[in-house]
Image (cartoon, rainbow, N blue to C red; front, side, top):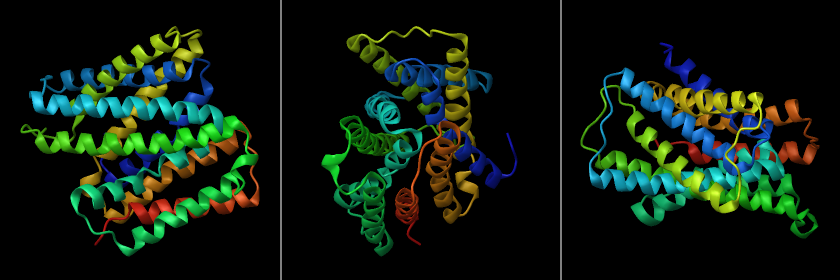
Length: 292
């Protein structure tokens, strides 16, 4: 793995920014692409653990928290993949990053944290940016577009729930990995999420068949590069870089996803949307900064 932690952080954010691109490129249904992300990714993580010395299940209380986290992660992917289909990779990823504000509210309500002034300012900034992007007349938007925005916000809520439960599982875990990375926990969440998404695909009547070799290649790339390598690069660098750079890396992912949407899928964009995206990204960055 790369020795420079700053480079690992930025490279990880860049790899993850391609996640919605993979979803848009494949011809399989939304739940199917979500299933293969965590199925292939979970298998790759287990293989990584076996190569590094073994794989042991955590104790029951931690396992139950990880199952709950997997439920939220499966919901996150279910909503997000549909949001990508309806409103495009860039906007879907931008809205999903509103989880920053849901985490802030959760910290205030459940953990008694006091909000910082910049966090209070960040929320209306981001909401104002979103209003500029989608337009102030909600009723004038196409039904699919409105559904995509709602799915994006549900993605943010589900991902915030996943993060809270995953952190709680890490706090309860007595065995700490030598490299400081919760690879085992992410592997278990990935495989449990795959089981849930596979079940959901069956209920929805969606096939898990991969129709073409190119679809299979994109799905493997999605799992390996975005889900596994992107996460490993970021997680391995967090303890070695300044907090401000972590905030900027969080900003880099939705920004690059928006750029890929314009460059690869010819997304039309007007000045109002540029201003809205800039305002929303600034709000996300402010909201993600740690209190000094």
